Length: 527
Image 1: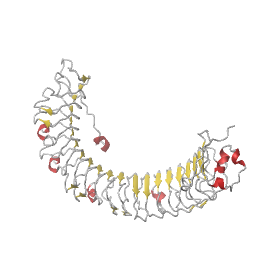
Image 2: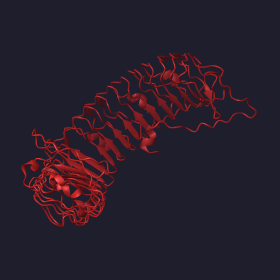
Image 3: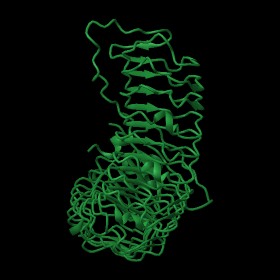
Image 4: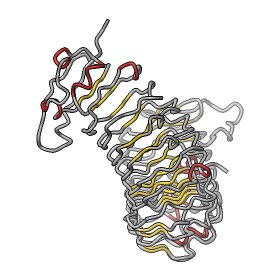
């Protein structure tokens, strides 16, 4: 079965199945259209007001989109018995005669998006028994007649998004047992009733985003045993969608930008195959501790702003995470067995929490980036980052760090970016940091010692509390004999960039602490 993304993309069907009869005349191509050897005719954007005449009866694909055709009369395509693809998008179509598409027994693709239709042209499409893809999006459709999709036994993809529907067309959809992808997004649907998608057992992708959905029936998704992607983004949901428990094949669940405040314990117990969950931009206040356990295929988890969460989530059985974000909570400690469970983790963002102590991250050998800024960390022990051979970026800024063990960074062989700005450091250990490209120490006003350039042979950008601390990296005679306690220096923060050639003037501002950190760009002395 094709993947969800492939199902949603407008697919190119093989349109060479109907061979021309031997000895047939060369294909006709009437101006202003263009034709190719594959019997594809392009008449798009030519200002046409009617279906063009004088084209070959053996045409397989006809594109008359982006014209000024307002109606399709009876037998409009009677001269195209082999037609497999018909594009009518972007006209001003408001009327399609019930027999306008008569005779198109081979038609597989019909695009009617961006027109002026107010209802599904049910009678016109009823006889299209070979149809596989139907686009009706971006019209003004307010109703879907009960018999709309009768006879469309082969239909796999249906677009009804960007219309004015106020409810799911339950009965018409029940006529489509082979449907694989359905989008009802960008409508005015406010609720999904129980058994709304009965008989759609082949459905793999369902898009309901950008509606006004406030409630979901507990059984609204019953029967969707093969659904892999469900998009509920940008709705008005206030409760977690419990109905997803009926979706055993679900791999991608999107419900960001709603009004959900609670993710309960065991929220995804019925969805063991989940790989992606998007729940950001919800006013989360509470997340059950076991909400995300036993999701062995989950690769990414993002929880932001759940202000009532105090315990680190239980991720037992969720062993293939590559990215974990938990920010804006009241979590004060990190699970001690995090790296025994999460050996695939590459990115870890635990910023904006209340974390005071750090466990050992030994075991997270794949970890490349750690963000721990804006917590309450006081010290970094020798073994905290031991074994992180892949770590490139470490952000510990805006904590209360006053002590770092002299060997805390000794074994970080891959680290290139280290941010320790705005802490309470008096000294800074350099062992293991020779490969740094960027180092930030600005805001550590108790750190008066100068750095040595030989410890940072690859450094390209440096910010330090005081201007004189930059002198080791570039010739600055004006600072060579300066008193390190000079008040004029204590008001400045310095940055060095080997890619720049000019020394910026040192200026200061008393507006606030951050804006008073003047940045000086300079280059090292050349030999």
